[in-house]
Length: 621
Image 1 (cartoon, one colour):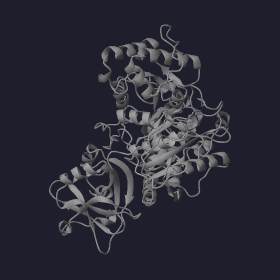
Image 2 (cartoon, one colour):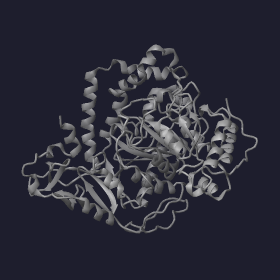
Image 3 (tube, one colour):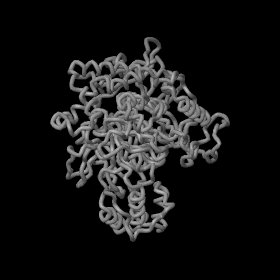
């Protein structure tokens, strides 16, 4: 049942719900959280039955929480970062005291505790409005597989919203909330963003805890964020990212802050032979997006996407389909009549897979992952169309499984290959359909991707951003919209550091890098000039990278950007036999990096055949 607008609230017809606007209103005293909550309720009532919501909080509860915020934090300087910001949560994420249905009424339960990510948002001062619709059990990319109705994109009547986080994306696109939480396993946090003209942030896997989230594929699931801008999405991600010791899937990854200046020029990979399934307008729109990236000073690198796409096909053609059944299979077996017919058909395919199939799938994925690493040696970021084409609700209902596969063409490989991503609007095609571009990078590159997403979004009508003046020559941006503001120079130059072992993400000394403000720039390979050794210095296991005159091999390293002063501070923390020197990369660049004195490797095992430190650690008994 829809909640009517509060009669005592003031209707701010032009109220902007982005974080910067709300912060300014609250700081100046021009609005209170109760005013914003009243406006949100009025907007929801005005839209009527749009299939966005599964559970709306009672108006008295929402307005009561808003009033409590004002009483608790009267002083603007003491307020938490998301003070009075309205948000929604996908209904496969637990909120204490509200039903979790996963879009299946018979599955519903009421949790006593909320998911840690929800509790962190509430502690940051955000206002929870309600829980949103989704493709049942987060299985689907269309937004049409729910007994609560199919969501449509607010941009084009009859167009699908995308899924599975359908209600979350529409709630943001329709200006009902400032941001919304979704989830992403196969693209559920990115496909709806492209189809609704919003920004979809798909974090590094394990950066945000999945405790309190109904699993789709537990080993792949990621909570995601829908927002109006990359800056807003990153601000929310910063609030919910944290290592959770009780979560078996949580990882100690860099917690993003504000997006840093981009290291120019980035090497941006694009498909050598992109696929648009006959949609010439979408193909032209992506070509224009690629031209904008070169206009920003970046270098496009053609990439063979087949290993990436082959990995993506494993999600529904391999053993990960059985993992979906493992999550809710018991309920489905007991209640087949309560499950959406398309969802039931998809899940039923997991029952025929064996343990042998599972191991063969894992081996195949590892082989494909190794192939994609070679591609990452030549690029910093991969840019793909978020979806290759679009469909109406009627078209999806005609062929729900086949067209779902088309929607996931460029998204399903992301979590399998442990990538972070952000989908940003890229305008509309000549046929009037929304178009989105996704930027992908290795785990830990969340800040870098947000920075690139923000500068790109500024060229397609998004918020203006400051672009650092580090481009080699002036460039022409092929766009009729106003150009971004004049470039501003950073106060201190940033250096690039190659990290091989204990300072990598998830390793014991990674915190030293994040404490110094280092930002992830992705993973690459060294030139074939090095050998890797396992040192035993009595403190902790760590590798030694040694340059050799012959017999060298490429070794995987993580790249980080940090200021010269931070680099100096890191040098003082580094004890022999390790030190900072110059490391040559496979693409010809020379960067700073950790190197080892040769004397320390005389009795150390040579582990070069593993290719990198994490794979060596995985090989240990």
